[in-house]
Length: 639
Image (cartoon, rainbow, N blue to C red; front, side, top):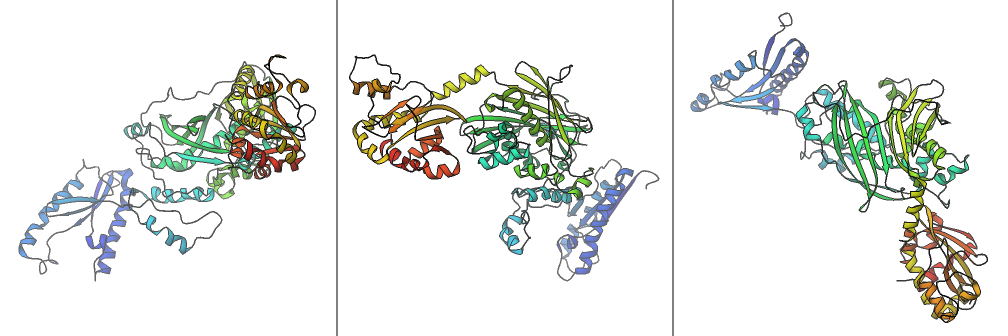
């Protein structure tokens, strides 16, 4: 058959081999063994146009003559099996590796079916029979089952579970591959992946900053590493961590028509755009879909758009561009208007260059931000992938480079970051020195990243767009005018008119409040209980001298506070007062808290002392006075 480059083989199995039959163990074993032989011959003969298929006929024979009635034997004549055999042997029949039941004029094809299954092992923990028992229903649930067509799909999918187990990702399925088709990919474009939420605290933000090289050696990096810094901020590129589950969560394997080998996936390009600075902590909801699929010949590119929301407000947008090696050549389009284009760097020497040495533990540290791919930690796994040793995550180098640009051209002001686009060119090994070369053209900073030791470009055609400083200032003022806390301070001022003397006796202190929004001080209030009128304290007022009584002036000034950088409450003497503007003299305690957290304290949902120890509330001066905040806010600030 090999010599003539043609052949057709038919194996005759039996329902006893497929399903088993009482008292026929030896016969069943032999008949199912024929199916295994046929499956392998089908694979080995395919390249020589040799097809092998298997039939499991139900037909009358000498074996069944004494068992079945005469009329049934007539209905099960071999004549009703032979036509299937003839067709499977015909030169125009392309069927190969099939299994068919046939009899009485009926033909049906069989295939293996597998449940989605369940992972019953957890990271760094032994696998137990108790865990199997707990997932047994899920293991045996054939809803949304799949049909692996080859040993590669079967074992490849199971091996693909390895990275999910190492990352702690919960998943109930494995991925499978099949030859790509243009029509199949067309149905995948626009497919909505499962939405998910990403919750994080200052801990995750700090861990990420350390993972991309922020260091306590640089005082300007402290805002990314110390949760009690007055301007603590998330690095803008933390936005990719929020969205990465769309690519790493295994959801791509569930997309109809997208049957490809995800073991050959590479991260090609990345785009991130922020619509406002990332909250220092929070929970964002992510919606993602497949924007387009491109045929690059040697592989295909999948564009995945991810939108991250805080409630209904869009916070950031990511576009992941992933390259699947060897899955191209299916006749698809090569370009798309949905691609966030990478741009070449200017043809001149760079305007600035910054370098950073990665540590030998850089990949081990960065993977704590959620990318648990063993390629970056396991030498054996890296060797299987063709690397001498584990490589650094591309998005880790991405974070190093973005941090360099933010430091060089925006003085680490996260509110100036708008967008970043990069193309990943070559891998980086932990311990190598990354060098970011930057070109400034208006508010766009072009850059490329090299390995200083080798000169290899590892990130190319990259840029960061910055927000003009004038736009940042306008945005800050606008947000300052929308603070919820303003109305609370007004209410405190009104109520102190009647009970101020009592509060002074209990509290005896002056408070200065710095209310922040998006990591920036948006307003400051002074609360002073000292009996001073506006005339004697000298603070600005909208009322002219002599037009109203002192009491009226105080009341109006509180009701209509000017937009000043400070709020103060003085509770030391007299009936006290509250005003907007810097403290007269010195405050006993200065408190920094976000507008959102302040409202949670006022509403009794956040304890001030717990807020202090968690870093949500920062205090300088007489810290013990903070214990009396509950009295002030609980009794006099409820709306």
